[in-house]
Image 1 (tube, rainbow, N blue to C red):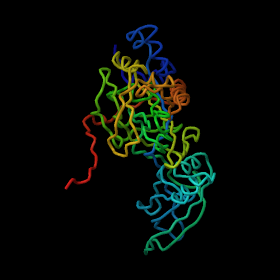
Image 2: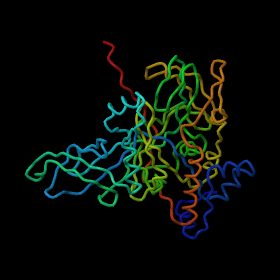
Image 3: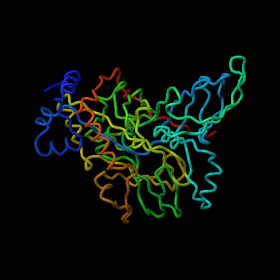
Image 4: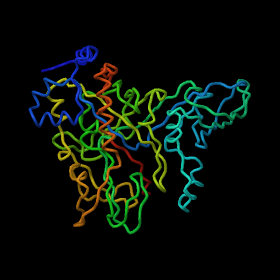
Length: 396
C-alpha cells in the first residue's frame, strides 16, 4: 500500500479524504490493525498548545514623513529590535517591558501585570492598538530623529511570526530537590520534590508521531497560531542525535523546527502572551502538523502511545547546565497525576494544555475535511546529523 501527497490532495479537493486526529488513529489501530488503518485513512492531524520562548514577530511599520531610520523602538514599552531595515522591527516574545522594575514590583507583591513581547504580539493579532515609540539614526536619507504613534495589524505592512524554535520533540520533567521554591521556565518548582512539571503533551504532540521526520521537512504546511504557516528550517537547538527507544522516539529533548506564518491571519485564541513568576515572559502557541499516510510504516509510528514514550526527570536545585536526573518516566505515568521519586509520591502537572492541544488537531482536521487546507511536499529534509554543542568556560 502506498499513496502520494498529490493523490491525497486530489481527495481533499474532492472532499473525499479521510482525516483523523492522531488520537482517533491510535484508537482505530487498537480496534483493527495497522494494515487496515493504512488503507482507510489519508491524513492524520497532530497538535500542541504549549509555552514557547523562541518566538517572535517581524513588523514593517511603514515609512514616516519625513522618513526615519529606526534604531531603537518600544511597543507598549517592550523593546523591539531595530537593527534591520529602516522600518523593519523584530519583536521577541520573551523581551519584557522595563523588566528590572517590573520584576522588583511583582516580587514585592505589586499585582500589576508584567507585559512582554508575547502579550504585544497577542494584542496585535487580536486587532488591538499598541503604543509605538522610536528613535532613529539621522542621515541625509532619513532626517527624522524620533516618532511616537499607535499601530495595529491593519495600519502596518507585513506582520508575521518568525519563530527560530518551535515544537520540541520531547522535553524534560522539572523537579526541585532543594530547600526553597525555584522559579523556572517550567513555572514554580516546590522544594523537597513538592511537584513535577512536564512540558510536552505526549503522544498527541506532532514530532512524537513522525520521530524521524519522514514526512515533515522544509516547506511543510502547518497550523500555526490559528493560521497557515510553514516549516522553514531546523529549529535552534535541533538535536536529532538524541538517544532513542526502539520505537525511534527520543528519551529527551531532540528535534526542533523553525516556522513562519502570517500573523494577520492568526487567531489570538491560539497565540497568547504569558508570564512565569520571577522568571519572565513567553508565548503560548498552538501548532498542528498534518501527517500524510503514505505507508503502513507511517501508521505504525503514529500509533505510539503515552506508555511507550518517556521523559527524563531533572533536578533544578543544582545550578548547572548538566543536572542530576532521577531516571525517566512514561507520559502515561506523568499524566496519572503522580510519580514516585526516592520513595516519595510527587504530584505532576503539564505545562502544555492537553485539552487545547487536542483542539488544535481537531481544528486542523476540520480545515482539511472542508478542503481549506491541502498538504505540501517538503522541498528539503530537516538535517538528521546535528550534534548539540554547548559553551564551557576555559579550565586554564
